Image (cartoon, rainbow, N blue to C red):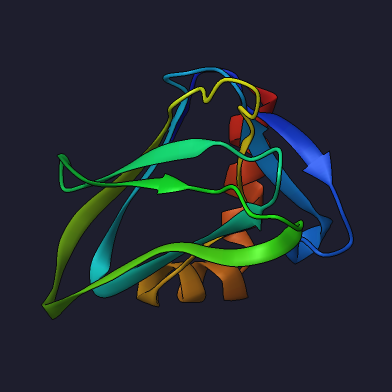
Length: 131
């Protein structure tokens, strides 16, 4: 689920050649899944800002995506649990002054891997971006 304004950006290094990005504080992307781990992948670089990561409704970390050089695919957040269960992960753009960009490339986990095999993740991302 996407709230706020998210746009598409293209780069050969992104999974599928594109990502969704936001610059406005409060823009949020979230996913609910059943599993025991999740990994969020996105670009880092000098123009990238900060994003708050919520797991099951609780703020667990604020991640700074800034790095000296652009990297198309980096693990920006990962977590796991001892048992599989229902979880929700949400990422909220902070709106960092001078470097507001937060982009999401893919979500990797048990359910995401199954959906990716059937191309449903990319379809979901495309439909959400078109809204």
